[in-house]
Length: 281
Ligand code: SF4
Image 1 (tube, rainbow, N blue to C red):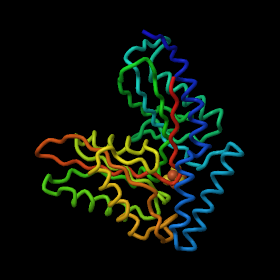
Image 2: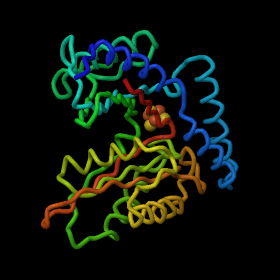
Image 3: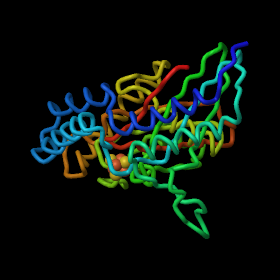
């Protein structure tokens, strides 16, 4: 059994908070560069150039890629041969967020009581923490600062089982169309199908952890991802919603078994500032 001081989680979350918000991942950069060749609209091309330039400035000057530095969502894959010492996991993660958002001068966007007293917590805590137990003695920490603009445009629908794949496609297209320029396109579309009401949303969220271009390992689902991405890009919303061919850089689908009487589908939209960083401890 390996012992791991929870301070290591705090340290990783602190560093990943700053890195995720300031340094764009190579897959995102490559996808934006490639989309310059596909985009025919002059305004769309100009936006794509600006997004790349913005990433360069953020990386060089260590400033946020976007002013909305998000709700900090943390995914922990915890090896079952680890014993933590030094407190609770949630506290360790929150301490990392608190330190990272303060030291990195990242915007604090979380209000404590969503209904009656929406007062800023002033340190971007609490984080949302998803924990999964896995074999081994390592911990994988993945951090996603999720912006409000794209989260607001996400949807969940309890469809009828008879709606089938055609119904899911229509739901995705309706959701992206209704979102228009609000989620700062080009977007990445995360889709979760199956499970329960809550689990479909979780599936949509974890699909956004994939690298751009990474297809579902199930060939049939991978084919649907390719087909639906093409359909999304036929909507003509374009970069920043100014019209064009590049509305989405990718579309990911995650599925899970469902009850015979239910057919939950969730669409979680990610914006052009798709920020995900991982560290293995
Ligand atoms: S949706 Fe994304 S790019 Fe747009 S403001 Fe929010 S975090 Fe920034």
